[in-house]
Image (tube, rainbow, N blue to C red):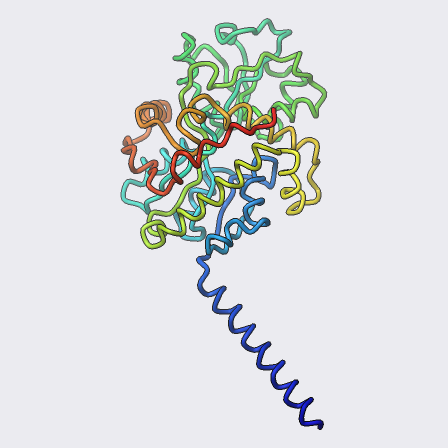
Length: 349
């Protein structure tokens, strides 16, 4: 063999070896975070997927794996079990978990994404339902785990309606909207940006509905938040801080360009209906993300008095065995500075 060729080959192999070693060391230096969504890859998951694909998590030294989910309770339980370090779930479901597992693994909300609960009432206008009072004596359908059903007492009390004056039908979630469209029930409860699109897909227009979003009708509950295992947070505080910085950055860009943000959902699941998921994302932003409180306090934060009140309301409505302290439910210690969370100015309406 030509000596110079031999030397060149040796140098190339050596360089390749060093490159592989360097890549391995870099990967070893990254902190792995397994992240559990609450549901399928849909419009509202855009900022999480954007932060992965654009490398925002990687810039924070994180190797984040985002998985679809099957409900908030599942996300919370998987974080509690240690199968995932962080997740996305309903803060009210977290209150319930902590109340029922006072000595169990600690989990905290670390960044509120849905500043209000997406729970809403959808009623048929042709049944003469225009206000909460008109629901008295009516039949309402919802799955047993639905937030609107479980928090019904809070909605009723806020609107001077006897909670027992309606007839509830617990139904499979796949049948809920169909029952309303067929006229088998007078109303349903469901997430605003889920049930509205489902009803429209079944041929019922928004003009045929009286829609009562819980936040607009006196229900002060928070919605979904990024949650984290306390054990992981204590051992890796910089990782949690980095995750929230990266997510906050992606959320700001999602707010500025929702249409473009849907690309990252499509890249993860090419079977989605892009138009529908763009609308779902915009509905989520308009109803529970870009709120008066979020604009005043910055994205991600909570008002402590409001949270304390919400926890008590959930404890009473769900008949929980105990009332978790606010600091067990949410901590602001990992949030980016407030000025970095004032992210709504450049929104595209």
